[in-house]
Length: 369
Image 1 (spheres, rainbow, N blue to C red):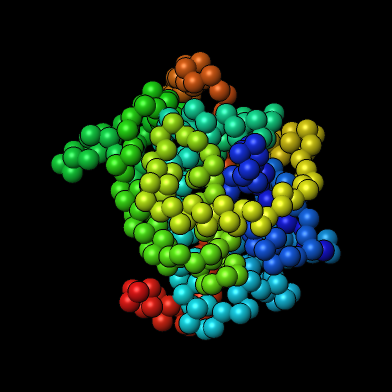
Image 2 (image 1 turned 60 degrees about the vertical axis):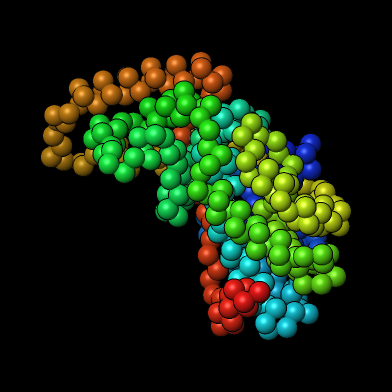
């Protein structure tokens, strides 16, 4: 039996079984190929050999982690949703999956974590309820932090305010040196700014149009049987369709222009059963995980040499900066009504370890279609 370690979901009442698209895609994949598996809800990535979730375990040993690696392991075990696809279709499926996990994943991350109104009003309080104390003090903001890092690496700007839209405006040097808590407070106070015209949504709209054209009037993308692409599209669009946000730009694009994609997600969801989950996180384990994260975060910066240590000439400035940060943080907590603090945890959006040689022909087929 396979054991899948996955992030849980604070949106279970809405029918979403994980807040992470990769985890939701793998859950759909396992159900669609009728695998013998068990779901374990995790609150940390300690079980994962690659430091990310989802992670697949078989016979008590961690096999693979991350979407592409898990799919490859399942295919080797004879659980292949694409077994009946010809080489051209398989190449097209890989190309479309890369497109979904690129553009749509970026738009979903932006909508959830970088639109302050959505994050402060819906996402963070629901995630805090999911993880419970003490991880609720750490995880929601750490997810936001790593979403920002991923989107920045992908070339997606976080908050294009008027000054940032002006190419002639140079950022203030002080802004780059402010502690992160000031940036959090800034986003909280700007929580009602409009992000509906952000370029990440225009890019997602283009990808959605391509997917909608590919699906057409078919039940599934490659005929009357679901494939890996169907599981991936479901994993990325189902949370968009089911979770209501104050600024719901991405869902408006999907529901307003691509009714066939909405029907497709509902069709796939009807094939799935809510898996019986085993909780992998207790209160004691949560305290241990929180302590471990704090130790990993602060031990290295605070480590001092055994000999030859010198007084820090900037000690007083650092103390004033930390004190000011704490005061701003207190005001931020009171303003938003939710307690959270940043801590590191990897939120990884992977690239496939190895793509078939036929991907180029698949991409060419997409452009020709």
